[in-house]
Length: 150
Image 1 (cartoon, rainbow, N blue to C red):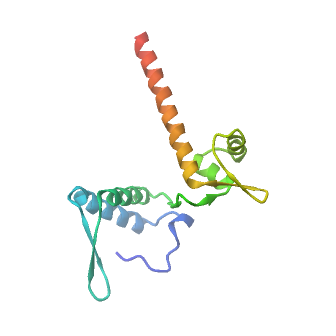
Image 2: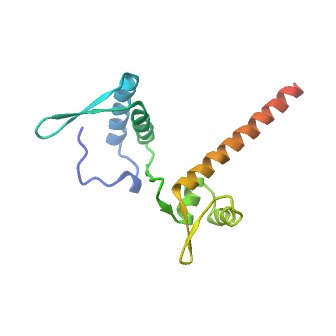
């Protein structure tokens, strides 16, 4: 299956049925060989090009293909990117006013560009990871407390 060059970016739309099928097929192929140090062969106009996939790159591709194969829209965010407050709030799945409160209370660093706040994507992802770890610890404590009652 070949996807036309004029196709829109995934971040602008959901993947088509054909793209979902292609992503699932590619994911299965890479997953079958990921532990062996997979080599991806791309057919170029002149000759095939072999690309060695490290385990880390294989995992990243598998994760990306898993989302596309589920029909999800996908956007990649470079960690050095400066995000607007709305973009950061969308990543954290919180309201923009809540995010601004987090910034003003020092939960997350930010820079001012003129009147506007800008947050490094790396800081947003680090905050998200900390928040998930805190939630996980709290849930573990609840389970432990519940187990003591039984």
